[in-house]
Image (tube, rainbow over all chains, first blue to last red; front, side, top):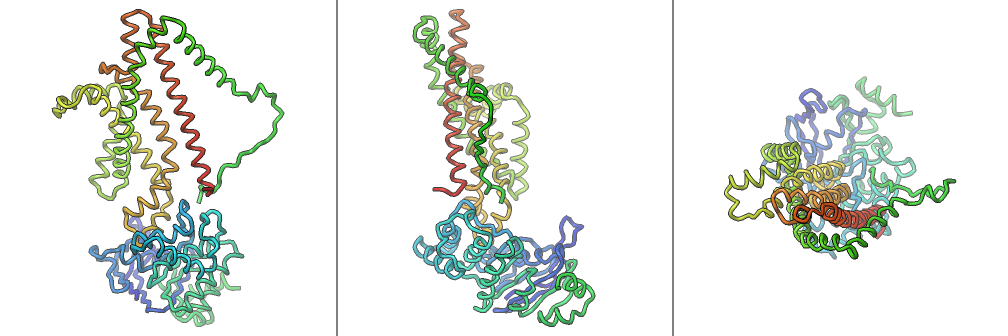
Length: 242
Length: 263
């Protein structure tokens, strides 16, 4: 479903954020990317829908080569949902309008169809009663769930999560992770950058550990947690697991 | 998200006496306006000045609205041009803004109306009022371009990333996501520019356009009633700008109410 080869991203010609990363994600697979902050894991994720343009390498998503300039990136992005750390809901639109905007503009749905889809997805994330609220009237957890519903409404083939719980108060992390776990159980192809090791244990088919822009270790979550082979991985887990 | 903190109105009962907080300035302005109105109604010299000057109001208002309209379109185009990915558009826009902003309005009016427009052989089609309107539009287009650019840049980049990630095109994201949010930052300074254009139409008098300032000059020069002529024209400007300020603050208050998510 996703195939990145030799992915390299350099900022300002001197900062090597991502170095020669190879990543394959099959349909229905849940891949969790972990690593210290500043290790380049978000940059890898953002290269997968071309929010960052790779300096070198090849990214093929759903059969489309993203690095080929003739690829219609808008139509690829419509099939790839993205959930951000800062939610990025549109503050001037209601929850309903947030969800229906792309349905109408990209999918060409009429108002009634779009509203029905929006209600279905809001029910799926558990907050159908907030349909007419504005984002600022919602808690962080509710905002993130709306953001997930907004992406899901497009019926994407892949969902990318960029630290979806890092901006949340602790008591709201669970409600968002529950939605993500359900999504993983439904067979969604997911790439998740997160610090939530519990989620990785519960849902990940594969764990990818990135440090200093390079993939250090890939494997089953349990294996890596219990027997990390590299010193850098050991150091990382020693710091965060207690 | 920085914009979700609506400024809270604090009603602290302080110990200052009523005459300290009373808006005396409003009383002074009202007295001035009342005095002028009185003079114009009952003093034949002022009445004469008023009768000669106020027909120019049509020209002043026409020039204001036309210049503002053209400048608005120009400003939006140039402002987006400055943020364009295209190196050509970006530099053309930047050059235009920098050159116009660096020259005072009065010499620019002479240059555009008397040199550039004849040079482009447009002088056959444009009378002096139109030339002056074009000049004001070009000048304020540059000022507004900066307002639009700043407004667009005030919208966090995550907003357009979210729009693009949903599959919206650049244009769709701009129109449905970025511009509506940028408007909050754009409308108040645009209002200021509207008032500024109104005042700057007085500069059209140097081209002999018969707006209120030119009429005041003519009246004063031919009758030697300088005080009456200029007092009346100042009075008219003050009335216009003050009522516009009131309108603008009402508009801004409406917008802050929307900001809290009430409809």
